[in-house]
Image 1 (cartoon, rainbow, N blue to C red):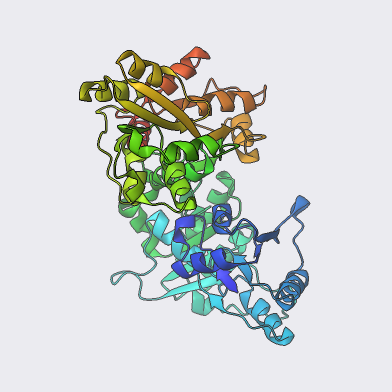
Image 2 (image 1 turned 30 degrees about the vertical axis):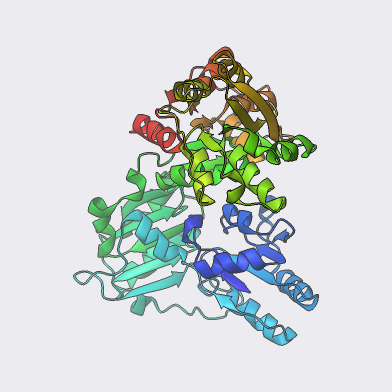
Length: 495
């Protein structure tokens, strides 16, 4: 399977590409394939890097093809994940030929090519009824074994829009040859470095000065060069680099299962998101007390859930025990906030109580207002949850039973990318969605990490209080205490 990963933005992967990545037994991926896409792979998939390694050494094409053949002959579903489109300057044609010669069946799944993405994300239409009726994709690096160049510079000079790949090191020669062939030196141009990523840079230039501008800006590959009158349209059409969080690097410390929604929202605002879970969600060492409580649900007046993790664990355990939502029919449900309620609604369960603010104190007040004197309440929660909620309810006269339906553990370390961003000062924000994310992050952060220049975002007052107890002042505290509000608070300060 030759699969185009698209350019830097992982959201540009096709639906077909997503399907095959999830099926793959083996994924052989390039340097330019967005790393986030590997999270789509099965946990047991074999991931093999086949891009550039130390000191610029590149894995030989013959070695890559041999590896593809070897895995194919072993009966594996093999995905060759290539940046952009595999058949546009991606050597996908050569790899397909190798599959044919080896007798391996294959498919080709196209991807968004870097040239098209660079134009779109820089606000440069590659064609336009007024300015460009034709566009050419051109390589700046031909096969060095070719005796004669395949590029007709006289013909290229007449094409209205030219999109050059892999030409950063040859911009002098490209500009000179186009001008010698008759292209005007004042023709608008643009260099788009790391297109469709939060690190994107767009350098406008004229053809005659493009090489000089690239040197001034220290442009490094990967970069796309667009030459033509359409490049001047960027002034009015640029959008990506105007997003409120563009160019900002944000660390997300949520557990892996919950990180996706927050990461996606921040990415939509232009941020570079680094997921570095500081909490690991695990089942309890034994389900004995949980199952005992589940078997007596009819004895309780209220079942209280204080987190989305608890709600997920509850519905999962019901299913594992051969039960479904009907088992909850005789007990009223209280959820601490909309995220917890949403987990229940996905299973067609509507909570009976949702406090106006999403804290344990507010939940206790809302339950007390309903009248809990003499009522039996079951709290389904984490192993390290605070006792404040149970104590407040007991003071109000409730009979409270608690059961731990999941454990919160600490990973061995922060993600390498997160540590690098913190040490180099690249990290602009860190998001915290619970007190445990704060405590675990601080326990895992290397001693040489300086947080003085990093903005901290807390989902609510309890999390903010934990930060302050460590001498850290949050830049924003979400109101209401939801993921959407947390994202909006960060974006508002960014604006």
